[in-house]
Length: 263
Image (tube, rainbow, N blue to C red; front, side, top):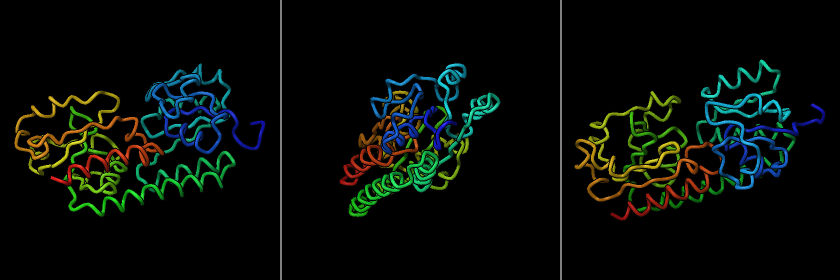
């Protein structure tokens, strides 16, 4: 590493890319995930990976002095890069507070602590403004956040927390601590029994099919289905644990929940 801090960074998921750009370090990003959409200018960078697959040779050709990964799902990629002698940092943030922690650690790694702290404060202030709006709603609608349709998977921890910040009540709060999708699989009958008033689909890159949701056995009696309170939030806005989820994703959640709270 020629300089005191990493100068050629490859990001295997979008949230670290977005953080680097928001810190003013976008020029250090030399490779990104193929799923990257934020910020738009990052899409001009070489695309080196999907989510659980990566072009190792392409990454090596970019001569990175740091690769940023996320979660155990990228463990195989990380293992291969480490064997090639690459410096790799794998984040595993799963909550709102851990997202702030990721920003703080990443800022320190690149020598931009003050900028990272300023970004954390900006994000936290935005979250608290929405929390105040959520608390002012006349009631808290019961929300089922559907992360995947088959098997049916409820929302991961930061999503569950954001639902509550936005003014809703997650119908499966006891599952938020499960990091793996398998631990958040729920049954059709149990969802119906908990009677969500709002259903929000975000199918990890797939378009939500509202008819699929409406036509599930026994779901015709669910309040959200009877009243047409079925919505979609694009996964890029909410299912990546970074600034987008805390800003645009949270704003969309509050918009949906506030409308549903009116009846």
